[in-house]
Image (cartoon, rainbow, N blue to C red; front, side):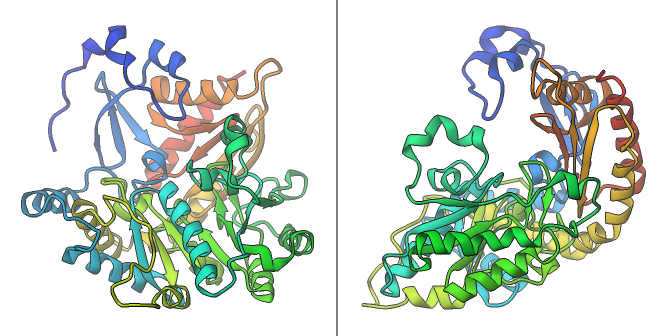
Length: 449
């Protein structure tokens, strides 16, 4: 790997920071005190001043195999030298087929077809369009309604924020959301689930709200239900025991498609290739992104059941079956990165490793229970969240300060969602690094007042 670069001192000049409008960021606060990383390797980022930052977020839930892994880097370099781009409309390249086959082999049940895109947001909008197209092809074009869930995150496309249930992501665009979307209640009840390791015993009944929505809207108008097996971006809310099974049964009862959004839970985060395997439930579609390339090259996609795929394969052979796609669907560099990443997951047994580390991880995180301002801790797989009490004058400020201090003073990276602190380290984390991170987090919590 390259040596640590010199600090980028010119970035202290305001004009150098002006043009870039950062996503999901308090831009004015950031540009007063920017948190910049310039290099990564293994479990670490390196800040602009050269100090190491232990990555406890896998970048953004995506670098599951760790950073700058040589096999992935070499695969991307070699592909760039061979085929930099291939048009995905009416043409293709071999790696797209190879990666699709590998993903279909990993997927549960009959999810044996893949539609590629470039992000989780695109994957969700793609899945919603496939659901509408499926019912149109089946002669039930009246099935247009989607059911999401409160506190759900499904990306930032108009479809995704319509079925999503995070208020802050919706309120600015509320008058332009996809009509007809409704929401199941959140599965979280702190009074009955606080400090649970893994899936809470309480809460399977939250799925029964789908029966009420079917009665309200008429199930013949509902195209699909979309949920995260573990709600990640809202603060690590694992599905209660039996909840997903009950959702599947209700969807089957009324002929409704079930979509699992596994953009976060896919590729080992919960100890399996897909969370569907952990929970023993086969949905009709799975959306994925992030970990498929370990975050190295943007890629996303939808795994689709054989039944849904075949419903489109009608009409003249020269007809386009689904009027949908992206310029960069199955981009050659992304496919090369994906294949190399899947090889790493397999050869290093990273899914199994995550499963084996889960008890150690959960015990370590739960050890913070008695620290000041801790209201709840949740964990599943290699993911965890800590709810902090809000400051009386500023909801979210304590979480923001924690994120900032973690990076600048304690040398590790975590995410804050308001006053919730979320962690999702690469699956390559060692037991010693778990101890290091939890020790740092404990000392950090003691500084928050």
